[in-house]
Image (cartoon, rainbow, N blue to C red; front, side):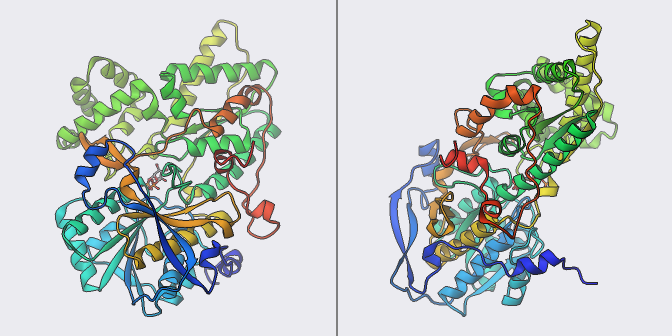
Length: 553
Ligand code: FBP
């Protein structure tokens, strides 16, 4: 037995569709556009990034063939896995070789720590070929170490110099691309010849803006989740006896939940941004849920499907205040809290230091949730929401609420439930055709940015709703996407996260249909991602991307 599946073998020979400019024997030239301003706090960002602020956007066009010298580049996969990471590396490798056959690519192992600890492997043709069009980040691994201390940046520089590396490509989400901008600025200020390029990755879909249409991985992950949700809907509608509460990944924004809800037409979908906008309490959400369960029960339908975004807890205003207080508290008293071994002692210690309202709320939460809220933050200071069981919390509270309604004679149904968490299942799938094509183009673009020594840029491929041959590759200065946010009790320059726009077409499509989908049963069963077959099935785009780009009404 070997460890390659049949699909694995077949999929390796898939040739990603390329933007025209990269699919020709002609040369590729860089053209400069307008300089960009930061997304917010412009003065402050300009002060913090004097060398890399206000750079022009660039695009690649067919033109004269440029003579490049050999370039050694390093690549890092950072943060959570997202389908297509290996194809970014394949595109980067092929692009570097196009520029000069003697160029070399080194992969730093295990994420950013591989760079500071000098763990790497040279990526040769045989290695790259083995991973083409596959999911996962296992070619070189990933990690969440944040590169922000001067000593780390110096160590990284020294390790790059030892390998003759002049360009570093960081494939990551908003935090990792923020890191890329900080590194680019640091090396520019020092006059060091190390170009730093970012690539937009995250299944969460929250690294997007006017210039970055979508991060890679969102397409595949939402297709995997939608298949599973569709299957659950069909099961629910067959057995007609269970309510399924499905928590979906997406640490902060609800793009994944929104896309999957549109795709599958489930009965109830919480969108965290709406909860925040309407200043809903936990009780409000539970009431809405209980009302839908009761309305369906009234017509004899004691089954349904509800989607809950992973990041919900931080969007409920009262919880947000509590979490912000907990974050500050843990930053200041983390060691003291850790030294208490008994969960009740921790709870007592913490509650004494909270403001009155937060204290009440914290003490009212089920013990497990209270414990989950004070678990270790990730290296960027974020609550690890994938570990908080919001699905169970809502099931428990909805059950209690239904019993209260029952005692008033307003509910006679049954509420048998199952909870699910779909997260990791979607992060390492074989990339969809869209993600396979997009990531390869992003990697190729990164190689062109590196070869043209454009430091502080994010690789960008635009016009994604068009056929791949019409996609427009280029680079966007990362500082253009930054603003100042409070992190771990301090103001920090970070890339602005894209949240669900409540005025945007995807959310409006949900709002227009959700009443009908709540009481009726209109599930759609999207089925698995197709890799071979007609383009309208294999190359289908997400509804989010299509609606945002007006290619679907
Ligand atoms: P990135 O932002 O790094 O792409 O990670 C996204 C994500 O998959 C979130 O959806 C999830 O909350 C988180 O990673 C889980 O992190 P971990 O892999 O460390 O458990």
